[in-house]
Length: 272
Image (cartoon, rainbow, N blue to C red):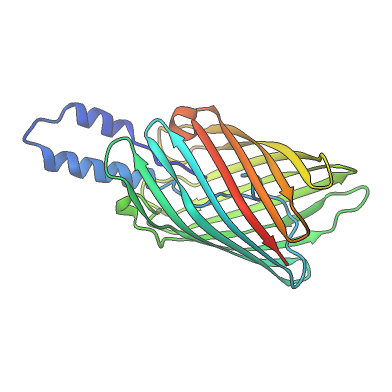
């Protein structure tokens, strides 16, 4: 999940405005929004409910459907989805297809509140190494973000993005851990291609409840923004074989004011 960020140019420029320079400020605000939106990616880069993903695809000919909401708060405002819809289908053994269609919101500290359609997410998860007693499961999950959201309203990136990761996973009894990372290619003006890394650990508390946590790191996404590190705590509750509740919350550990003062995720999942 990336954030809506005002740049230092906006703060300095606003301080130097005169009453007769409204149009200049409007242009400055528009440019700042575009730079900030260069790193906007709805919804979560994730294996719900976490930012970090795993290499395990949906089972062959099985379906996963989510109705979810997420948000991130920074010093400059709040962004999120309310809701986004996610669908995964096991199209072949070890392969699933992935789609997210988000309805997003952008509530900056300065400017208008906006809501509308966000960028569509497409992906293919492929597991190419099976887990054994001595080796982890390994897979990849390329993700393509299509620029369907309106960048001028702060609802999208304005240009396509591509994520190329490798993920690993291993289970020991009631414990499971997964993680890895990959490279984001962001084609928006002012954005920087960047690396994302994350690792997660979870434990089955009961037959129905699993709890865990993750730590993740991103290299710089916009010039002068800096790198960021954060964490989430969360898990999921299985009501039965088909109905599940997923949840997580966390914040940034470094550079939090710009990137993540607080973030949360809640979803209902139906599997069949």
